[in-house]
Each structure stands twice: as structure tokens, then as C-alpha cells.
Length: 191
Image 1 (cartoon, one colour):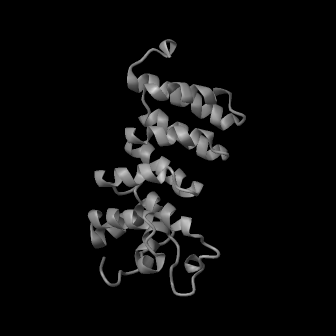
Image 2 (image 1 turned 90 degrees about the vertical axis):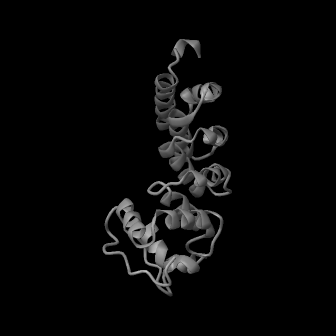
């Protein structure tokens, strides 16, 4: 990364626009590397200029985003994963799959979102593990991932959530089965 980046032209634009602007400054490969470094635990202070583009937040000295008691370490990993929604290289696959086992749900959920967008079949086992997560939103996102990238061995796990306690999760389970049926060219009755 360059020693100092210019500030984003407008922090209020959608995140994808900010990431695209960062790409114009440093290139897509460097942004993917940055995301991977952040997912791996790189200190946010070392990437404050770039993080403005990945978050739409201020990282000036004294900013709350630099205060680890307010913005815990998992945020840095989540921001790195979220950046991969907007830039991609296949070398990020292993980090996204590993991030599904993050100790905090935010990075794991963002890795599920990336796995869904990038249709990462390798994320299937991790997504199945997250079907038991206590948070409804994580279970629902795991179902979206399986709908986009799951395989036949994941069908029974998805079917198990058709009776989930939360209506959004039940809806996502039904949608995931529909997507899997269409994508895998299978008959739903065979499952």
C-alpha cells in the first residue's frame, strides 16, 4: 500500500463504491491482500487509511474505531471479509472457508456472505456447522450459502431447518432447497 492514501471522495456512498475507489488507488490484488491480512488479524492502526475505504468510517487518531474497548478485534476480521464481497481472487478461498470457524459471529457471517456471492462449494461443511448457531441471522445466512454453493450431502441439514423456531430461517431453508434443486438439477422428491 502507498504510504498515505487520499481520503475517500465521499464516505456516504455505498461500500462497493468505496472499495472500487480504493482499487483505483492501489489495484485489486493489493485490496484482496489487505482483506486477507485483516482477516488474519493485522492491526487496524497499520491500515487506517485503507480501512476508511473498507468501512466508510473514520480512522483518524483518537477515532472510536481505533479504540479496541469499543470496536473489538473481531471487527477488523469482519471488515476484511466484507471487503471480499467487492474484490476477489481465488487465493482468498481458503481464508473465507477458515473464517467460517471464527470465534465471533460477525466475521463468520461475513465469510458466509462472501461464500454465497462467490459460490464457494468448499464452504459447505462450515455452513452446515453454522446451521446450529444461536443467532437466527447466522443460520439464515448459512442457508443462503448452502442454497448457492451446497451439494447433495447438505440437503438433509437444510431440510432440518424447515421447522426452525424462527420464520425467516424456515423461509431461507425452503428457498435454499429450491435453489439447490434447480442448481443441482435434482428432483426434490428424491431428497
